[in-house]
Length: 163
Image 1 (cartoon, one colour):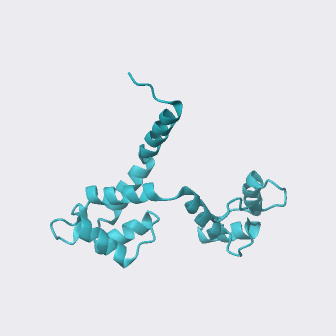
Image 2: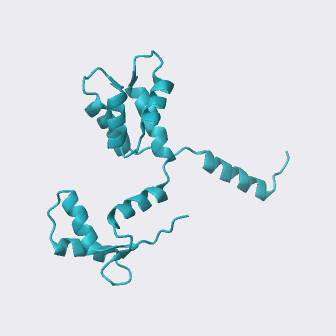
Image 3: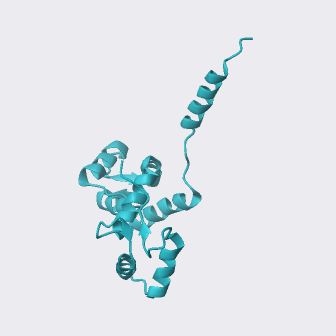
C-alpha cells in the first residue's frame, strides 16, 4: 500500500470541496416554480418568449432579447416556441448558482446609494422606502441605519470594494 504525502491529500480535499455543487434553498426552488406558474398566462405548462422574458426579469435577471432567444433555441426541442417548467427550472437554477454573491450585494448597495457617496443615508432610505410604497417613519429608518452604523455617523458605509 502506497502512502500519500499530506500535501496531496490536502489538494484532493480542496478539489473535492470545489467540485461540490451548491444547491438552491427550498425558498429559491419555490420562487422559480411560482414565477413559472405566474407567467404561464395561458396555463399550458410551457412559456413562450414574452412569458420567459418577464419571468426571468421577475427573478432578478437582466435578460436581453438575445439571451431569451438563446434559451429558447437551446431548450425548445420540439420547435414550439416554448419551454417547459423542467427546462426553465434548469436554466434558472444554473443562472442562480453562477451569480457572484459579492456582486449581487454591491449592486443592491448601489440601488440605495444613488448619490454615489459610498454611504446609505437617511435620505437614501427615505427614497427607497417611498419607491417601494413603504410608509416608514424617520425613526424606523434611523433604527435601520443604527443597526449597521459602525462609525456612529448616522450612515451605513459600504465595506465592499469593486475588484
